[in-house]
Image (cartoon, rainbow, N blue to C red; front, side, top):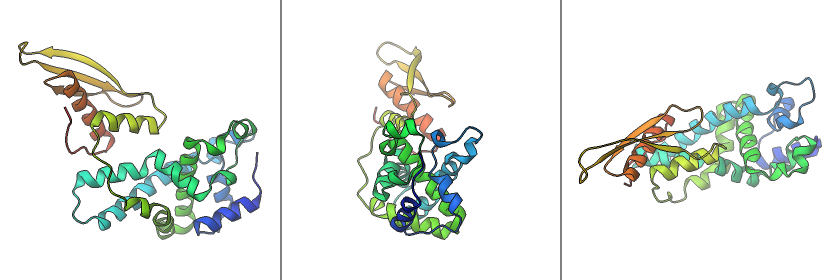
Length: 237
């Protein structure tokens, strides 16, 4: 189901940016369900979502670096992860009122796709990518500052343990919950050491050691988070 041009124009007004390349904006708002028979995935927002995800990360990293000069790497990483997660992008999409401008297939539209958090988050990232292509870094930076700066300045949420962070990261990307498996238990009964592995689809397995199974699971989750690129300051064993 296509949307009227006035929806696109209204969106441009809300985000404070007018596209020179209107077909680029159209593509940024086109869900794969709306593609006609001969169209490829490249005609949907998926490639722009990929770019926008990385542009968003760079802009917010730069904003955080300058806004919190005394923050260490761990705090900056946690703030970044919170600001670029899918839930936050969906919140921003709602603030933009992105839903009415989306181009969805009839079945997706009737199923409430304009309100679905995953679609809103992906389209939000695609829009950032499209603004970057159309107007350059400065335009993308202005867009991100407009919708993320207030969120960035909010107090940092309490530090969560690695297992919780990893589970939220997986859920935000539509992945199943991380799977933990005890690989070994060594040492004497009064002082054991556990070795645990954690797996996620399409990610290399990570392992952790601990004096309890829970501590080993936390260590494994922290190891996988490090591979993903999310810093963890401390473990809650």
